[in-house]
Length: 128
Image (cartoon, rainbow, N blue to C red):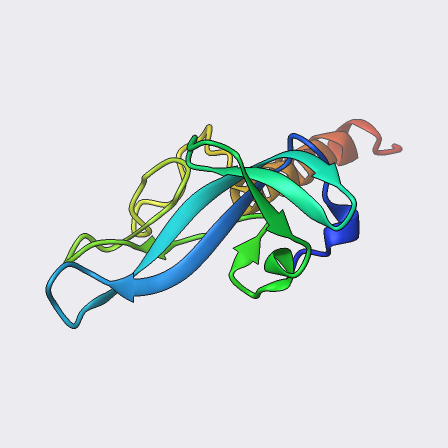
């Protein structure tokens, strides 16, 4: 899903996600780069990739399919290393860590807390 330029805010963190070759091989892996929006002026924004100096990007750059508000949940980024979460670095087989900042992991924790709250609440609100 592309990011609309009109919805950008200064200080927002975006992710540039794309597949590329791994070293001198024909194997592919996904690279995820952090983009921080520093300021917005007219039809362009000043952004910083991975802490590098700011540079100006036009509104059309953000409409590319590789710019996202959150990286994929599991990223294959190495030879034989399996898929890992970009935030907590846990392997997909192990699942997210309990303090992972990935939006999908946060959503799952919220749903679990809500389900546990309803289960506990339903026993206390039962009428005799």
